[in-house]
Amino acid sequence: MSILGATGSIGESTLDLVEREPDRFAVEAVTAGSNAASLADIARRTGARLAVIADETKLDELKSLLAGTDCRAAAGEQALVEAASCADFVMAAIVGCAGLRPTMAAVEAGATVALANKEALVTAGALMTSAAIASGTTLLPVDSEHNAIFQCLAGNREEDVSRIILTASGGPFRTASAETIDNATPAEAIAHPNWSMGAKISVDSATLMNKGLELIEASYLFGLPSDRLDIVVHPQSVIHSMVEYIDGSVLAQLGSADMRIPIASALAWPQRMVTPAAKLDLASIGRLEFEEPDLERFPALALARQALEAGGAAAIVLNAANEIAVEQFLAGNIRFVDIAGCVRQALDEAEFDTPRSIGDVLEVDRVTRARTRAMMKASCA
Ligand code: NAD
Ligand code: MG
Image (cartoon, rainbow, N blue to C red; front, side, top):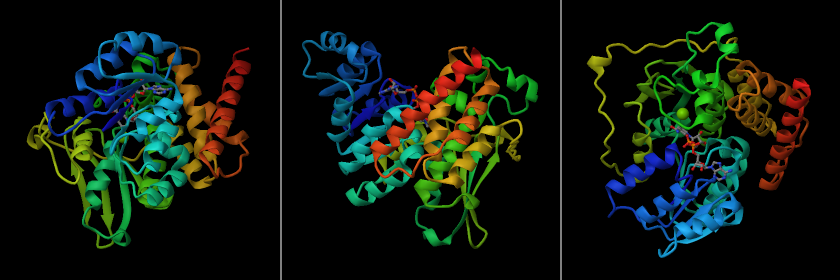
């Protein structure tokens, strides 16, 4: 297997499982953005033969850290693509649209792809799902909601599905006033009540953009339009999502809020493997609650649905503007409320043709990032 984004939160959980069963998995390649020390440590531990760092300025450091091992060090996008194309099983866990080319390379190579990198699917969903059909790739969703849906669909006919119901925890500001939310700090925004995750997805969970991206992700993965994809807030994060069938049956997947469960489901598919995740104790949880999402306090969710329904390049624009806005929010340069504001403005101003290639997708991504940065500079001046 290859692990793309091995130094991240999903990468770490994947390695935890893989290292518990060394006879079951052989790690061929591992990648990271810029942390050479952590990547070299992972490469040594797993015996990987290729370690790729995206940041080319870190290549010399990586080479010297791997001196005396059988692991080759490489850097840059082409090397990431190589890491994605050299294994039968690829864990795609880079964050953001930066993961698109490597994830597509894994799909085109016909590997089984465990997909955590939701931004790749959000920006290039139609291209990626058709490439998967052409190469015979199996896409295994790792996002807990989509993994839950995938499990609830097993053994049923697609045409018998009436609706998919994504659950959302509601994030750290579920019960906060609009004023508190508008002025939330990065520290408050990344303090997720149920899940421990990377910084970007934690902020997305606080704005509910994460649920919006997941709506688009679900539409591509399961081939359903917006009006058959519902969202319900479920603060306990015990039910990870549900599928409703035409006879009125609703199937749900439950488990503790530990990403090692959906990751293990993908790693072992179509079998199962043991995980160290806590077993669900329903009596001690006591009650499961549900409520409607509040689109006024969390406008990002409505923007994402709007982008899904608009089609074309809208989801790429949504994602790119959001990536820049989250980065600027984490750097302390804009307010929490401005994240959705930036995304709305980017969507309002966008006029792109429907992308026909990954090159087209990356061009819309690049232009939108530049425009969003310029827009922020102008509004700060
Ligand atoms: P993270 O920030 O913890 O890790 C991201 C990984 O990508 C790191 O290895 C980092 O070095 C690498 N990376 C960052 N920028 C890069 C670049 N420009 N080029 C190449 N590599 C780069 O993120 P995470 O929380 O592990 O999330 C990874 C993906 O999984 C995201 O798309 C996220 O939405 C999705 N996801 C995460 C969780 C979770 O619990 N963490 C749950 C569901 C889905
Ligand atoms: Mg999720």
